[in-house]
Length: 300
Length: 314
Picture 1: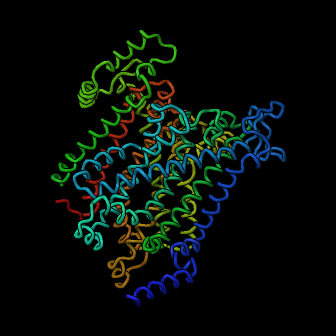
Picture 2: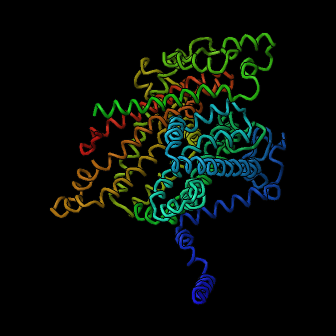
Picture 3: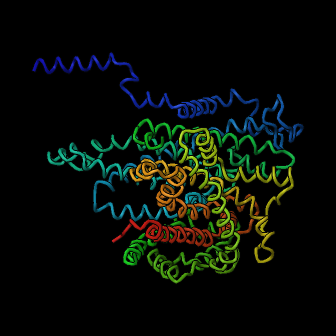
């Protein structure tokens, strides 16, 4: 008994002495992935920019300056101004807040709902047939079209974009979690837990759920990226964020009518969307490769 | 194969039932009184009551659902409030531009995506592969509407090579119709070409690592024959799934591209119906596109049997 306790203490001490990166090999692999490091750095930068928006911008994004209408990029207005003299740079910086809030919220929404639905579906065969048929039905709609229809019903508000996109992406998350759950059910320790009489829900949420976290994080990153794209598309079409909110899609939609006179209005928010989605995709690819090294081998 | 297809058709029935039910429920998700929302802000109580009666919203929910199901099975998608004609007629009138845009975009996606994916997969980890995959990654990330606007700015306003938008029916003039479709198709198809390129590359890599490819090399076949004859055929099997899905995704994406290029297709019909609160049209169009998606899935499964004789479904 004494030796067992000592052994455990030594093991714990060894764990403490081991460098952080050696204990978290996935993180080490992630940090060696240039694309993922770039993606992560861009996202970190965007978060800082979105938080510090009032400190970084020369003016309120909605402040009109009729004397400086349609000014091209200059020192005073790095991204130029629109037809009301509003500063595009400020709009792009504040727009980052909308995109990040929507992307993150949709990611959390679809992850939580997808995990619960996926676990229940993968674990309870009776529920599986019903849930998966509903899932298949939901996935038969192109994502942007279902989101448009839901926005038509719910009305143009940022919170409604999160609900619409959350509903759109939950079935995709649920399907992945279900497949992980199904493969985990065959693992010996889950069989042992079942044999010991552990309740199904406890097995599902305590023993299987931790296995679902890596694919959930990877898929969540892609959901984040798609949500940023979809939010901007919805706003561009006039069914997303209300027009008085400086979302990237809204600014591009406004710039569309002034393409010839002021191409910069839609140029910069478009670049912002492209860079954000690119960063998230690179981060997602890196996370997938580092959390599941078999995928990396396949890709190479 | 026919037994399998019949079984697949049976499996599609519950999926379509779910699709129809979701579309039915959409109206009932409207916060407050759907009839009041559809009648508009200036509507009198009489107008709202009339709307409720026209839409059948004054009947019990189960009766509304039963009627909706019965009508939909018969191909009746209701009547547009704004256009004052059956939704199916409204869709049929706008279908030609959308079908053409989708077809041309698919051709663009295949012309760019397939060679890019095959070359990348055949030469992994070379500069060619890396360069193509960077472009493919950008293609996945670029917002289609923004790409469309930039194409209009560059090719229509600056270089004056293409028209900035609008649609000319092929029945009017085939060359002019194609000419007007080029920019919108490139805008919509580019993103999908990137997805196809990535998929083909990954399938090629998987196939090229198999034993029969090693055997083909060992017996002295040239690398070109190994890659383009032996590997490509098998790599195309999973790729065909993506191509099938692409058609439905393109139909969804057409909503945005048609708005950017001012094309009066089904996609623009949806957007204008959202702004006019013409819910029967929104319901009809998304039901129609979901139906196309489900049928495409079935066709792809059937094609599987033809492309790869090893696949047997019984």
